[in-house]
Image 1 (cartoon, rainbow, N blue to C red):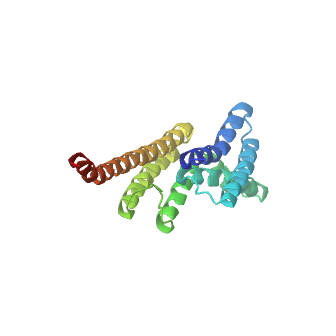
Image 2 (image 1 turned 135 degrees about the horizontal axis):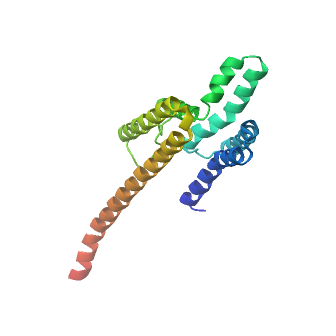
Image 3 (image 1 turned 90 degrees about the vertical axis):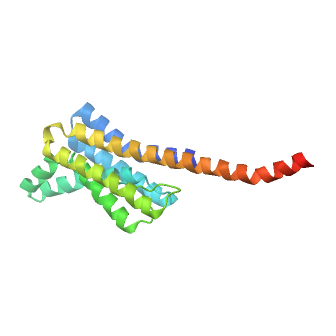
Length: 200
């Protein structure tokens, strides 16, 4: 299997918990049930990816960690009698996805060699620059989502889409430049041989 095919399949796997969570939530209206199913799926997906030693998508990893932890945390607070804290977290839980993505991304920027952007064929300085740009977009989206809890679905979807599309665009540009450089190098290496063949 080619690397790009494997990457596409693992990205699809990582996206399944959030897709199932949203579908169950919208269809059943039972947020807690959807949350528990999403949490279980995230646990299985994250466990499978760790077991396969596959590099996780830097953005979807934050989304999945949020889905994994949100429902157990909120339900646990209610069960323990901390209704006030539970109500606040429940109200901002969906917008909190971007807070978790930002926190996970910031941790990756500090401790991961591939930073938050996790782009291929790029210097560490550019990796830092691109990671900072993505984190800035995530932070703006998080503020937008938390300040407008009534329309929290829109800022979360728009911001995550912007992060994923923006990262994919950057990777495509870098891959195109790398491929173009490879063609130039190959052409330069072939030129002397071609000239000699013609002279012969």
